Image (cartoon, rainbow, N blue to C red; front, side):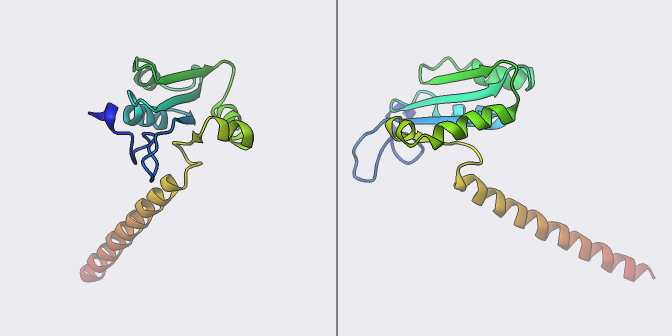
Length: 145
């Protein structure tokens, strides 16, 4: 049961087995929010706060986030805001060290280095694939001449 998994998936466990509450705080223009919510909904020791610019994402994306209904998930639409405004708010809260530590803030988006590492691997793979396709096209062109 995911409710009992308070370990490595952002569930609030620590390496010494002590349970602690974490607060996932992020800004989204769509998919990051839905993904974080899907992965963390219903977790006992995790609160999720996802900021987004009201009216600036698709209806489907907004419904994916706001229809969750779990008590630990809080979607926060910012009126008259852009994604950059939401991100600035998140960065300011992470920059307030007292607030960050008191609420055990963690981030689900590009502030999190794990996401960057995963994206780098994807782009390296994609670059190699494109290079292979270019080599094949060049060989075919040489064979036609």
